[in-house]
Image (cartoon, rainbow, N blue to C red; front, side, top):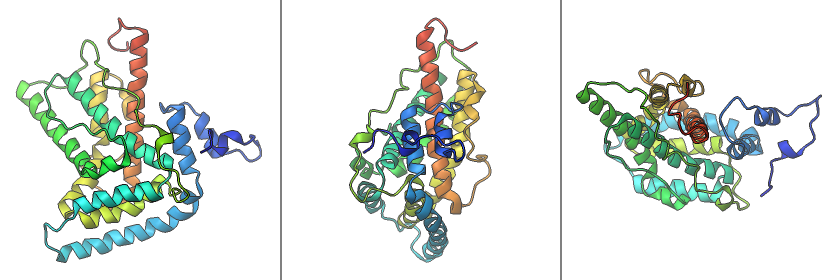
Length: 298
């Protein structure tokens, strides 16, 4: 694997500037250089340019087809163990190292963010943190558990706050001890000759499979969970007093369910929103460490 992607190594041509280089050099988002390089290299790939425009409409057609198929199948028909085996093996065999790295990071960072909210809200919330070290760890029902964790968290948190008669407010000092860089390394991801499919194309391919092998209820819940990005962002803004946590979280209003046809695209937004929010919290942790006497920004 190259140390740096081509858009960084190639000489800048003012008459034909690279959009990827512009996005990489832009510092308006909180993404670190490592994840930004991986994200943009994956987005600039030939798979993303040529394969994804073909896959996306076909995948959406299969979502409609499978919805009709599910209408005649038994209501509880599902194969979650096979689904997770298929997803993990597909990721290992066909998906780019950058995409696989970002997928594993997502579970770690989602767990970090929920732990941050619980700790600073001052409530005890049952949890099952998801911290896969390898792609094989995904076979332990992690995709479905990720959705369950999110909805259960929102329910437990708000019930506890209602029982105590209070709302989320900034604590005297933020606890950011759980916000850490991901221990999974990009260089440890599979990078064989067949590992070329980019993240967005892979998600579009896997979404109809996800629908077919889960119950209709599980698929709808997974799709609707994407609209909780702004909800989680609001919780973090209330605890930190920093509304900029909401700027880059734009997966639509949680009270207006979206069509499952766009679930693949919105899942990409969900992953990027999690990276953005975790990056903001990492920056806040660094500022807190630099000025330990300051609990919150002025």
